[in-house]
Length: 284
Image 1 (cartoon, rainbow, N blue to C red):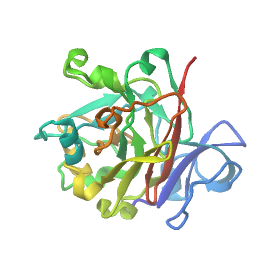
Image 2: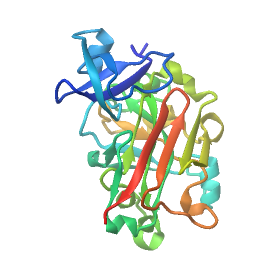
Image 3: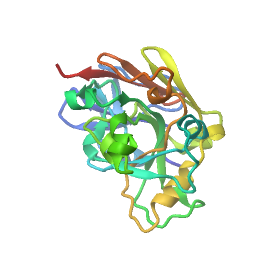
Image 4: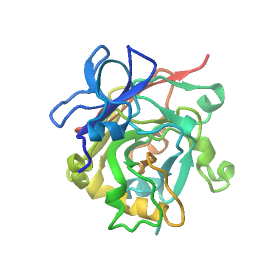
């Protein structure tokens, strides 16, 4: 058992630290500013029910147990997205990373400089899992023992630098800009996730549904297979967030193509996790 149901991380009014709290399985919405919660300074403390404090929520943070860890990303992991892109389903999950500076928090405005604003800015609503401990050479059968929980994220991308003439066959640069990985608002336990049965990740832009991802029906490589593959010969640190790919409906393949603009509001939601909402803010 994980030791929590729905984990949130937040800054508080009482000090400059960040805290973790378990909302339980029945709470629908993440806590608003001013809510008082029983909280802990680390996830381990929460699981062990050690050194609890009652503090007041100031701002929600991405629900990751540690800071400063690169974020892994998976490409072409939904049949529907491979079809809309006209690409062959790969034999193994394509992988790259985003720097730790790419992380953004729930409700945070995403600052976009002029360079990125002119580079075909796009969204990708994705299921995200987070590792619970260091792992290496993990089998698919054992991978579930290394997953702390599940949430959602937005793999923001500059499509200009995914074009064959500009990418050199790699996607890192197109996706590695600051704040290009909003994640949250809550991290649900593997028990609540229940292997994704019946779960959908829904992406909206300005209230309009753009993507509906059926995890068990459309996903090609399960989180367990992804973690097993990426850990071969490589130590994956505890607290690593892994964005598991996106379904059909990204702006680059709409007709006409529709890229993100200043003031657009992107929402990624999944039942039990809640809604990850971020506004795109071009620098003027």
